Image (cartoon, rainbow, N blue to C red; front, side):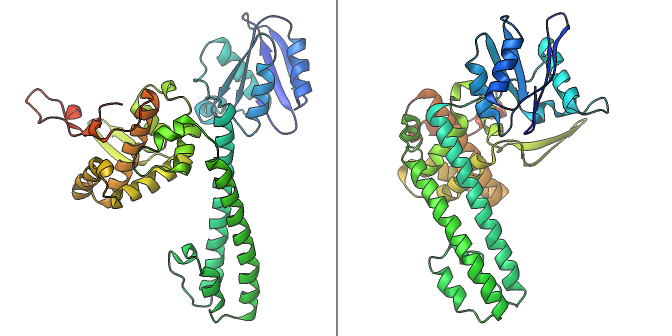
Length: 357
């Protein structure tokens, strides 16, 4: 099923490749129920790409008898959909149907429900508000810069930035622009705080476990839970780090292997909060944070502060994975360097690891 706002294009085949339905249906719950009814009483596998309508479509399909839902990530079927030089909604639906029949679909997108779904939606809304606020601040900086006034990097992070801005000697048109932007920025900031307050009021034992980890607070713990949900769905720590967009890209050709920047394919909100937590760890001095701080200083000495921050962010994410998977609070004693390497010890065994994970 190819999903769009105007209609859903459906291509249904049976195990013998016979087309049992081909056409469009209304993009409504009633349209989906009528489709399932037309396809008969036999078991059905419905495949569609993840998008902004995924939630209600999946909920509607799950309520139908003998229906299995398989949601795929658009990036994982992009190369298949675009192969052959012809891409239309009908072609996309047909290719998904044949991939499903041949058992060649990418693994399912994890659909979160209940409190986790509520947290994920609130986190997403907060990120959108924050992005719009930052965009407006950057636009306002551009207007102010046109009159030769440069604002400090942390200017808008100060509590009295509004008063300081009013004291600047600027032209009348710019004063009007500043006034208009200021009210919008303040409104976005208030909305962001409102969402954050509602988010932090959600009670979940998994967030309480995560908050035992140094530098992880109420917002970051809920961001992690909303993204990870069930830790057991991941194969290992590397899979979690990749999901959190905190693994380096790899360029390999023959015997040459180069590590590039961290990937952009994972969940950006996870990477953002983990990097913020990593900066906090770099400034902490509590006993619980000592192993992480030692890890940071060791990487910083060898590879610089920026790479050390990314390494700590990735370490925090894998620790969070270990805590969620084990169901036990963070224990700094489990974070320790491995014993002195022997001749038989591999490089991987000499890494600074979290035993619990």
